[in-house]
Image 1 (cartoon, rainbow, N blue to C red):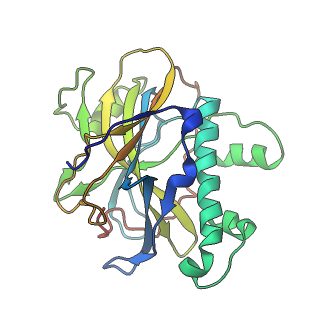
Image 2 (cartoon, helix red, strand yellow):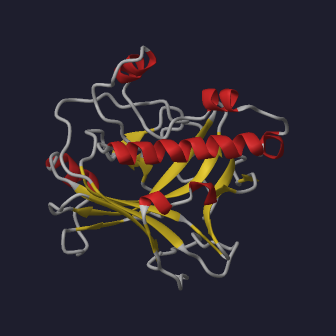
Length: 277
């Protein structure tokens, strides 16, 4: 818990160019990645999002990796607000710009934005049918989602599952989600890194907390949060003082109907790879 500064930031005042892609690193398994940090003057910290009162796509919380057989855990919040949609699209475009600028350093050769877009997985996920509609210039049938991974170390999840009053829930989240499909949640997650896989590149989001939501009016705000929880080896050794940037959003309602899970995220990354953040 190493944060001493807190400041609210409005959407229009947020400078996404301060989301900085770090140097390319390699973990013990041989995988390559770059940490993502938000640069605020002399402070350098994780970038957090808090999507409030959102529905989750009807995908299973637990799945099995086709190649390794390892269990993976994730949630997919629906992005149902155009302003939020644009915000995450802008984040993606910011990363494309930086990857192009740093391509020689990161990839050993220059790569242009067109080439990078062909290999950099979109942050916003659409079903295969909706991607075809978009490709043909039509509007998608469903709103997009974002894939957020839930880490598990030594049989313990690294995120908190709490009720509307902030009290810890004892029930396994996967079971609760399955038996309460229409429940809305407050989903707090962070950007961890960009992963450089064999098939392409992708952004890794990590679940920090999921809370059963109460109905609230719509709003959108940002803040630097000093409540970061650092567990086990999840310690940032780059700086002594960390500022956590939080996106506080409230979204209401949800699309009816079924959605096909988008499987285009790079599957070459081990779910709990040994790179520590």
